[in-house]
Image 1 (cartoon, rainbow, N blue to C red):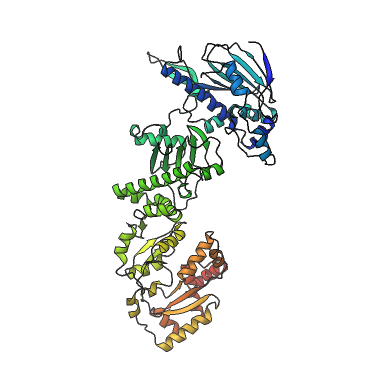
Image 2: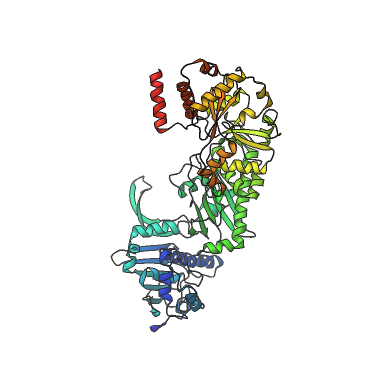
Length: 621
């Protein structure tokens, strides 16, 4: 064929500046687009070979990427169906950009970040984000001459015949000076690992030296093509064909330095939307930090994003793994995800599958489920707070752990405590500790009265308690050091003070005179002689509001956080020290010491107060 020159048929000559401007923040995407095109062409030729439409041998069908740092070129080669001159003219020269004028007008004042690849058939043209010149050398599977095409980033192109004899296409990018980092082999390797790790056609990048044994057991070193992707990742296989070790190996492939997961869910849906993937439950600690961006989204094995907040419910963002849906386009935007009906269905389906899996584990192997509760509980509680449907599904397998490390469902716990942990209003009082060690004295006081105490020591628990009280009006949650413990059961009122009324009045005045007046309310209680002589308790509601404020709650929580701290100083009139205090000459010193002990017990004695207490204790000894 003779050399053809012309202009690329678009509705505006501004197409290349538009590509560079609007896709600049995403310019690395060019490699994904070009390699995906190469894979598509290869898959087409495979189908043709399978159907008998292709004449001759299929041969090696690897996609190959080469980098020449000296020449500043990146070459993407495939052995796919190739293109004839007519097809190059149709698919390259006549860009499917009929609404370019409207697009430019609409976005002319927008700065960066507008991803238009794919929406206007511009996958190939992403090359011009990084290249000052692009060449195509292509030989069709049809018996027609090979074609050479080149363009320098303007609407001007040149097309002629080429000497290529093998089927397939080579795309040669001459990297521009401002994008020279893409002419580096390590950079391209990183991008291939990010975007092309699981493409369904083997991708060759470089070579590796391996040792092979011959028939005579003699080892020889052989240089072989290096395939840098896994064309058949676990999520593309049928669950029946996979063993536990296969799932674990795939997890290690995704997260090489992580602990093995607790368990996983294999998603495989064909209708009403297409979705495959594997979601893993990682091991989490109570001092966890939510690690987002651990779920990768693919479209037909092509990486799309690791920001899946619009697809996966927030309470499941702690999960790890892969989702793949051809119903989600490669060039996805948040606005698209928020409005797309398929995405909403996928979100709902994922939530249901997670709940089903947890329910199944609870039912089939409760002992194993309980052993994993430290990690599972974070998912379950967060989900119950965030999603009404998940709450309804999860309430029967949500567990409550007491300080004895026994687990209960809410119904089981109700049966355990309702006979002796009910207040005067008929509400079942659930006592809990947020710090088993720091609140040990209060826990011991509760257990002496045969009360049971739950452990709520996770960051999310304050929100979870609020949710549970709103859903279960016959329960009341109260921290073990709150001011409700001594009021809870009528039998406590049978304890009689050993002090006379006059002695109690004197004792109260002594304490009020020697402890801070602001924020401290002195109360005398006839408690057990085994209880502490002085304790600090806080109003459950006020303390909870303050705690919620510290966790970042807005509105009334913010207001409560700004209020000065107040608490009750409970003096046990039945403790031997109460009587001793009335008879000693060192009342101010002893009261100060007892008050400091109460503060210390609550972790409230700090700084200079703590230093003074220590010095005073040394002097006393």
